[in-house]
Every structure is written in structure tokens, then in C-alpha cells.
Amino acid sequence: MKKYYVLLLMFLYAPAVYANRNAYSRSFMFTKPGYYNIVTEQALWHDIVYNKKGHVRGGLQFIPFFQRSIDLNRSARYFLFDHKTELVVAGDATNNRNTLNIPLRDIRAEWLNLPSDFQGTLSINPRQQQFGFILEYSQDLKRWVDVPFIRDMYISIIMPVASVSNDLNLTQSQISNEGETFPQNIIQAFNQPSWMWGKIATCKKKRTEVAEIKILLGTSYESKDYLQVNYNSIIVIPIAKKQNAEYLFSPVVGNNHHLGIGAALNIQALLNRNPQKVAFCFFLDLESTLLIRNRQYRTFDLRDKPWSRFMQMNTLGAEPNTNVPGVNLLTRRATIKPFNVVDFAMGWRTKTKCAEFEAGWGIWGHGYERIDHLQETDTIFGIAGTEPGTTASRSTIGQQAPNDPNNTFVPITLFDIDAQSAANAGALNFRVFFSGGIINIGRQEDTVLGAGWSIDLPYKNSMLQVWNVWIKLGGTF
Image (cartoon, rainbow, N blue to C red; front, top):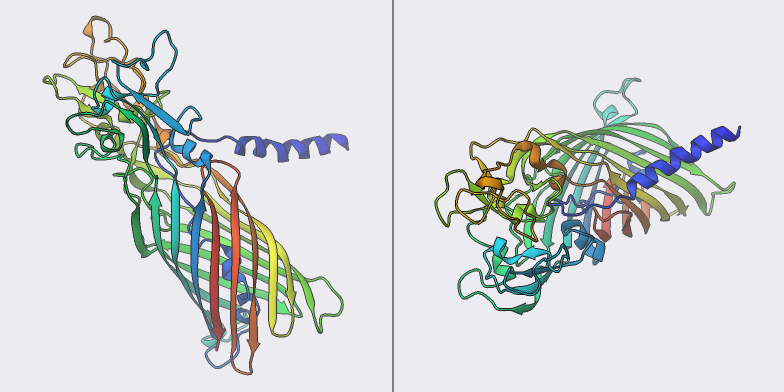
């Protein structure tokens, strides 16, 4: 019997160890949509939507929401490298240049077209704000076709509209020996007009769109005497555009234009014997959505060379002073194979004749993105050497190595590109929530009015820590 306990512990422990792996030097982060919360959708709504009255047998709910991130140092590490929250930029003519394998600097200033005597420090602080609303309409099918097979089925259409603002808050400090021509400092260096992709914006980037159309085809197996069992199938039709690789941490509305299919389960059970005045219930909500692959532009690093996308490249047969920014050559269109998004919540409800309160705990998470089928290029290029048409393939973002032996041109191939550097790492958020409101039960229609709050606690640095508030107004008729 003991061996079964050991196997069970290994089964539970292994995913936890795997999930604890943080990510660094990534060029893309998928943030949790502010409307993506099964608790928000179900709160107060579950009682009236599964027991519709009236001639139409329909229901409508409107949910404004607001979500904001909380500053965490480890969120900055997701975009930086070597587990750091700030990076030193210095040129070859400074005392900070790397010598004797002692890394006194993180970024070689010359890679960014800054002077060789330039010194400075950069830091970032990723922040995000989302607000918008969710509009949902639910219709019982027995209003149209009253046959045993589908009389307990319904169809719901959910349309979230969101405004997303992202800001990396790029900051420079301890600057000395600024350049006389553009770029003069770190902020300008990461916003060079010649960079087509991968720039770091100096202000908020905002996008407001209809995120998606979510269609639910469900069945209410049981919904009386405080016992509820409900199941629905889901299809998510993306509306909002894909992420824009021109800027690092560009805002994304919804699921990054991925089509989704999934299912959801909602359960409620009574816990006390005499619910006439007050009913205590346990509930469990689970939703799983599988996102379908699509093609996007992503900016990549080279294998084992973090931030190598910001280095300069040489092309075969190049003329003097014609180095090409790495971001222009290492940004490729690729096939993005996303993940399965899981939203789980459980807790307790206290219900009276005209009010309901609930509190509980949940998990929101997804797996690792996979990227393949990178677009090839006809340009033959390598890490820039000291002379036109030469390469220094052993260089890193912090140091330019000697030219390759005999001035051999060593090109970069698809096998040298680290596909995972542009992939979103897996995420696991623990969520604590509370909500409450009033319910008005009428003869032909029911209405609800309530509000709720939640906070997400990320287990890994691939997700921002956020808090969320919402208000709900709904009714059936």
C-alpha cells in the first residue's frame, strides 16, 4: 500500500517542481485577460440563469471590470537575463569592459550604437492596466423547440470588450558620457528608427478592442433545492488583433487571436439541513479552453546568448558601416502552438432569500507555448566582426569576441535561433476572491446586482500579479 502513496506523492510533486522553473530573457509575455474569470461570470448569475422564467426564457448580464498589476521584481527578470533586475551598459573604452572573464558589464554599448566611453544602467518595471465590460446573453432552447432531448439545453453568447495598457517603464540611471549624436543614451538606443522590431517604448502602449465572441452550448442537468449540475461546450472566436512585435511587451487583447474550443462544469451542493433562512453551499467551477495555433511575428535570441537580438549583424559582402540591427534579422514569422487555459474555482456561498455572498480560492494557468516553422530569409548574416564582411560568432551582448579565424564568415542559421526565447512560458496563478450582491426573485423576471474582488498570486515570473474588481447587473425574462 505504501508504494501507492509514494507514487501519488511523486505525481503531485513532479509537476510542482517543473512549474517552479522561472523564465528569463523572453521577448513575449501573454498576460491574463481581465475578463477571464469564471467566478465573475457565475457569481449571482447561476441561480437565475438555470431557472429562467417569462415568455422569452432569456437572460442578460452586463459586467464592467477593472484590473491592475502589482509591481514585482521577478516580473522584470522575465524580460532581462542572468536573474537581474537591472543591467549595466558600458563601452569598450570604460573600466567596466569585460576582462579576464569577469563580467563587469551586461551590455556592450557599441552594440546599441552608443559611444565607446558611454556608461549607464537600465531597469524596467512591467505594469499593466485593463478595463472594459462583459456582455452575455443566454437563451433556453425549449423556447424554440420543446422536445425532451434539448429542453434542458441553452445557448449563451459572451462578448468581452477590453482596453489594455502596457508599460515596461524603461529607466536609465548613472549615465555618463552621453553621445553627441543620436542615440545619446539608453532610452534613445532602444528606440532607434532603424529598428523595425523589438523596441522598448518610452510610454504606455494601449489597445482597445472587442476581444472575442464566446459561444456556450450547455445543459443544466439539475438546478433545484440548491443542487446544481451544469455542463457546457465552448467555442471562442477571436476578434482582437495579434500582438505587435514592433515593441517589447506590446498589449494583447484576449487570447492573441487564437481560436479556442473547450468545456466547462459548474457544481453547487447544499451543506446545511435547514436552508429556509440561510443556506450554506459549496461550489466548484471548472473551465478548460484549448487554443489553436496561428502564425505571428516574434523576435528571437540566439541559443545560449540572451539579448543577442540587440547585437549588430554583418551581412555577407557588406560595405563599411552597414551593420544591420539584430532585431531586424531575428524577427521572423512563425507558427505559434499555444496552450490549454484552465480556470478553476471553489468556495462557499451564503444565501438568503434576497442576497448571496461567496468567498473562495482558485487557479488560473496555462502550459508552455511552442514555436516552430520559423520563416527563412535569403539574407546571409552573422554577428558583426571588426571589419566589413567579417563575423565574430563567439560574441555575446556583453562582449565582442575576436573575429572568426582567417576572417571566415560564420553565418547564423535556423538551428542557431532559440525558438523558446520568443515563446510565452507556462503560468500558474493562485486566486483569492470575494463577491456579494442582491437577488430579486419575481414572477416573470429575476434580477441581480452585485460586485466582487479578486487577487491573483503568480507562482512563476511568467505572469504579472494582478488585482481585479467588477460590478454586475443582470436579469432573466
